[in-house]
Length: 115
Image 1: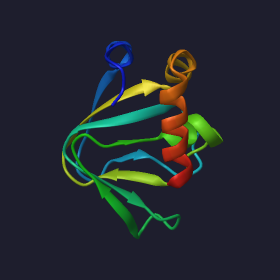
Image 2: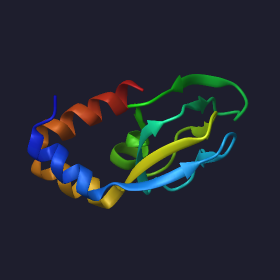
Image 3: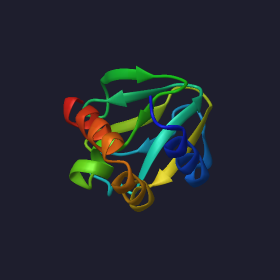
Image 4: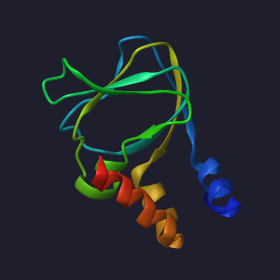
Protein backbone atom coordinates (compact mmCIF):
# COMPACT_ATOMS: atom_id res chain seq x y z
CA UNK A 1 0.00 0.00 0.00
CA UNK A 2 1.20 3.48 -0.82
CA UNK A 3 2.05 5.85 2.03
CA UNK A 4 -0.82 8.21 2.93
CA UNK A 5 1.26 11.28 2.06
CA UNK A 6 1.85 9.90 -1.45
CA UNK A 7 -1.88 9.24 -1.92
CA UNK A 8 -2.72 12.74 -0.68
CA UNK A 9 -0.24 14.37 -3.04
CA UNK A 10 -1.40 12.25 -5.97
CA UNK A 11 -5.07 13.04 -5.31
CA UNK A 12 -4.31 16.77 -5.48
CA UNK A 13 -3.03 16.30 -9.06
CA UNK A 14 -5.97 14.27 -10.37
CA UNK A 15 -8.29 15.79 -12.92
CA UNK A 16 -11.66 14.26 -13.86
CA UNK A 17 -12.68 13.17 -17.33
CA UNK A 18 -15.61 11.29 -18.82
CA UNK A 19 -15.41 8.70 -21.58
CA UNK A 20 -18.57 7.52 -23.28
CA UNK A 21 -19.08 3.95 -24.45
CA UNK A 22 -16.73 3.16 -27.39
CA UNK A 23 -14.65 6.37 -26.98
CA UNK A 24 -10.93 5.83 -27.40
CA UNK A 25 -9.14 7.16 -24.32
CA UNK A 26 -5.65 6.55 -25.69
CA UNK A 27 -4.43 5.28 -29.06
CA UNK A 28 -1.35 3.26 -29.80
CA UNK A 29 1.79 5.29 -30.65
CA UNK A 30 0.40 8.58 -29.30
CA UNK A 31 2.60 10.60 -26.97
CA UNK A 32 2.03 9.43 -23.40
CA UNK A 33 1.18 12.64 -21.58
CA UNK A 34 -1.19 11.24 -18.91
CA UNK A 35 -1.68 8.31 -16.56
CA UNK A 36 -5.29 7.27 -15.96
CA UNK A 37 -7.26 5.95 -12.96
CA UNK A 38 -10.66 4.38 -13.56
CA UNK A 39 -13.23 5.63 -11.04
CA UNK A 40 -16.28 3.96 -12.57
CA UNK A 41 -17.19 2.01 -15.67
CA UNK A 42 -14.86 -0.30 -17.54
CA UNK A 43 -12.46 -0.17 -20.47
CA UNK A 44 -10.84 -2.61 -22.85
CA UNK A 45 -7.14 -2.68 -23.63
CA UNK A 46 -6.75 -3.55 -27.30
CA UNK A 47 -4.10 -5.56 -29.17
CA UNK A 48 -1.87 -3.68 -31.57
CA UNK A 49 -4.43 -4.30 -34.33
CA UNK A 50 -6.99 -2.14 -32.41
CA UNK A 51 -9.62 -4.87 -32.79
CA UNK A 52 -8.90 -7.70 -30.36
CA UNK A 53 -9.17 -7.06 -26.61
CA UNK A 54 -6.17 -8.03 -24.49
CA UNK A 55 -7.93 -7.39 -21.18
CA UNK A 56 -10.69 -5.47 -19.49
CA UNK A 57 -10.15 -3.06 -16.61
CA UNK A 58 -12.75 -1.89 -14.11
CA UNK A 59 -13.20 0.43 -11.15
CA UNK A 60 -9.95 1.05 -9.29
CA UNK A 61 -7.67 0.04 -12.18
CA UNK A 62 -5.05 2.29 -13.71
CA UNK A 63 -3.37 2.45 -17.09
CA UNK A 64 -0.93 4.60 -19.03
CA UNK A 65 2.05 3.95 -16.75
CA UNK A 66 4.06 2.19 -19.47
CA UNK A 67 4.13 5.25 -21.70
CA UNK A 68 4.55 7.73 -18.86
CA UNK A 69 7.35 5.90 -17.06
CA UNK A 70 9.11 3.81 -19.72
CA UNK A 71 8.54 4.60 -23.39
CA UNK A 72 7.01 8.07 -23.84
CA UNK A 73 4.53 6.54 -26.32
CA UNK A 74 1.34 4.52 -25.97
CA UNK A 75 1.99 0.80 -26.40
CA UNK A 76 -1.71 -0.09 -26.82
CA UNK A 77 -5.07 1.57 -27.36
CA UNK A 78 -7.68 1.77 -24.61
CA UNK A 79 -11.38 2.17 -25.34
CA UNK A 80 -14.29 2.73 -22.96
CA UNK A 81 -16.79 -0.14 -22.91
CA UNK A 82 -19.28 1.74 -20.78
CA UNK A 83 -19.78 5.34 -19.80
CA UNK A 84 -16.81 5.85 -17.49
CA UNK A 85 -15.44 8.42 -15.07
CA UNK A 86 -11.69 8.57 -15.31
CA UNK A 87 -9.18 10.65 -13.42
CA UNK A 88 -5.83 11.48 -14.96
CA UNK A 89 -2.51 12.90 -13.85
CA UNK A 90 -0.16 14.59 -16.29
CA UNK A 91 2.98 12.55 -16.86
CA UNK A 92 5.42 15.30 -15.88
CA UNK A 93 3.53 15.77 -12.59
CA UNK A 94 3.52 12.09 -11.69
CA UNK A 95 7.22 11.73 -12.55
CA UNK A 96 8.04 14.69 -10.32
CA UNK A 97 6.02 13.17 -7.47
CA UNK A 98 7.51 9.69 -7.94
CA UNK A 99 11.04 11.10 -7.64
CA UNK A 100 10.11 11.94 -4.02
CA UNK A 101 8.82 8.38 -3.47
CA UNK A 102 11.34 5.94 -4.95
CA UNK A 103 9.51 2.87 -3.61
CA UNK A 104 6.36 3.87 -5.48
CA UNK A 105 8.42 4.64 -8.59
CA UNK A 106 10.01 1.19 -8.46
CA UNK A 107 6.64 -0.47 -7.93
CA UNK A 108 4.96 1.31 -10.87
CA UNK A 109 7.94 0.71 -13.15
CA UNK A 110 7.82 -2.96 -12.19
CA UNK A 111 4.14 -3.16 -13.08
CA UNK A 112 4.81 -1.35 -16.35
CA UNK A 113 7.58 -3.78 -17.30
CA UNK A 114 5.37 -6.80 -16.52
CA UNK A 115 2.56 -5.48 -18.69
